[in-house]
Length: 107
Image 1 (cartoon, helix red, strand yellow):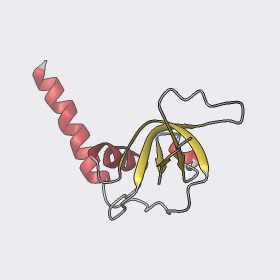
Image 2 (image 1 turned 120 degrees about the horizontal axis):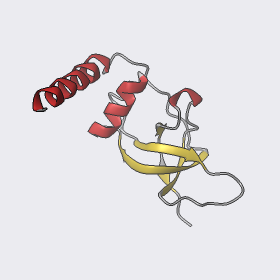
Image 3 (image 1 turned 135 degrees about the horizontal axis):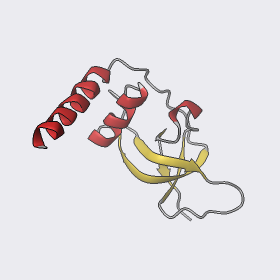
């Protein structure tokens, strides 16, 4: 059982290592999109790097907050049970997995 687990973990690590810093560098613009994110982490965190690598993004050299597992907040109301932030409008290709330059919304 442990040998299967170690093979899976090794495969994931090799995939992540192969996918990192060769991706697309996302542009940084003024945050304009109201988002509900599961968490907001520094762009230098392992979580942000792992998600970015899966999406083919290169966060190397960026120093901005990154929203993970984000969805837009509609005009109908803010039912965000997590972190409400304003981010760069996330690319539709990222599937809500990541948003760039997320700043907290203060009321």
